[in-house]
Length: 173
Image 1 (cartoon, rainbow, N blue to C red):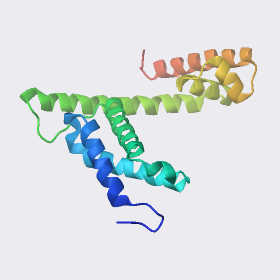
Image 2 (spheres, rainbow, N blue to C red):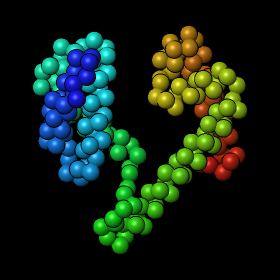
Image 3 (cartoon, one colour):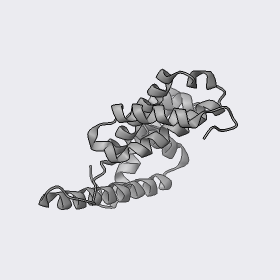
Image 4 (cartoon, rainbow, N blue to C red):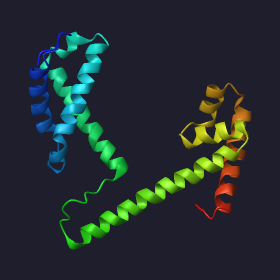
């Protein structure tokens, strides 16, 4: 599986498989192949960017595999995935359903927040959206080319409007 672009994908895949097997926690054993695939995609992207000389070092491939494994762990932690396949205990199925219900509730809440944001005037919507994405008022001021006082005012008013809209829909903090 040597591709014409100069990558020895078979060798790289073998290195990545060994690295993922060492880095991957036992609880993610069923996801190892997915992690190897994600690592291979990173390798191809690195090659496409013209950084192929780094790929000739096995230690670099181990770093890519470790990074892909950590990315998968973080992704699962964010989503709090629960398997429906084989519940380990009688309560596991109920926990799975509860987790699914939480996911649905979060999606519904996200839609309601998005709907309320869409109703705001554009400056307040922009300021509130940036705030919800973790921007501080000074960062929002720089990003939107506003004065700091304008950014603070619009964040404060936008979040207030968002809160009132959500409360009007029966959603409380």
